[in-house]
Length: 559
Image (cartoon, rainbow, N blue to C red):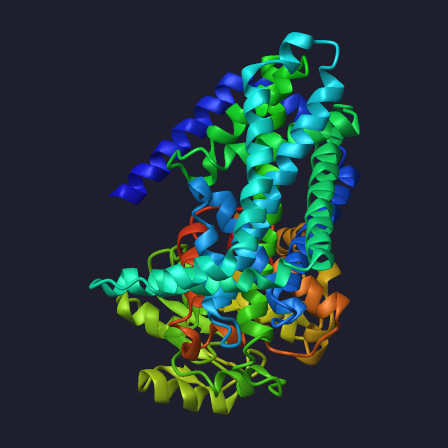
């Protein structure tokens, strides 16, 4: 109930922000956003993540590989953008703790030092930028908040120096503590290790390097903010961008329990923009656009990071499989394949009343699910190994080992489903016409095909696929056959970017979907993606994806 209430509150706040900011003004800004500059912002975001990773790696004395640590920082950054009051910091400690060569003290110290230097540099940026922007306003420069910030900055430097200088005494103090409570004992032990880990920055050279890396992080962050604002058509100076860039950091410290920190972010950042004489409406619009792009960019790297940690990092699956048959033979259970399982559930929703033919039945997952819904169903599958495996998993199903070309039946069907079939057929039009001929009058054909021809790459060639399909061209071909299009939509948005990187850029030959298998069902990556397909992809048409789903019917004009 708490999660539902939080999500509902977030939606309400987001809606109020939308209405308050003025949707016409927001749409106008969005319409005029320069996509080239947004790409530049994304590049700066990548550099910022790399800079944060290098800083953590420096403090951890290079004990974690750059790629692995980048994946940790990417996940950590996403959760910090989603969870309130910096509670996403826990994810960093949890993931680094999985590395056996990193002590608890080193783990905590790396995060604490990063945040201390972040605070010192943010306050410095605020003071310097504020001075140059408002130097003509003596009352502002002499205001209580600025005096307070200067005091915090000086106090922070003094406290940091004192902790480093007295680290051994503080470590001994916590080591000497003893409690009846096991949690308190563990906490005191971690604190003792943390103070000892500060040993590494007693050296002025290492301290200077850490400060330089932290400065680099925030310079990139400032450039990122500047470019995002520039993409929206607002030309701020670098000093003004540095001033505005402080406010997102302040927003994350406001303990409002909303998903994505909506409301606190917009209100805080808009306040900084208003100080620069931006109208309230434009200030809220800009803060909303900045917030959405930060969340979007961090989400993309969150997906990549989970992919890397579960696909490349662990390498728990067979890279040698070159065909679906080889891959599927290693599955524990087809029902634990989150992609095919959720896709089968989705397409079965489009059936009209009557019987069903599954062409390219594979392991029989869809046939089995149809039977559970009391649907009269038959399957055909040309691969004998897959037919044998279907019996192993689901018992004896009505699946004939025959290809669509060879299938000869007097029986007609009210529904035919072809999932991932057309791309495997050299003359797909001939076989499509054959499938249509097996339909009853007003029978329904459901097709699932790989989308986006521009993604055709190394994996498609490895699998023997002849093509990927264009939504526009396949729609025209189906209409030319006299079919009535009921529904067309994309599916599997999350797979597009990883697929492009793996098979267009890196040109790998591998079954990336091996992470779908049952052996990974207990992993967080599996659970997150299963949730995504079940509750997002199957409920919302996101406008693009790796697959295209067509639902068509025979008509009087059908060939």
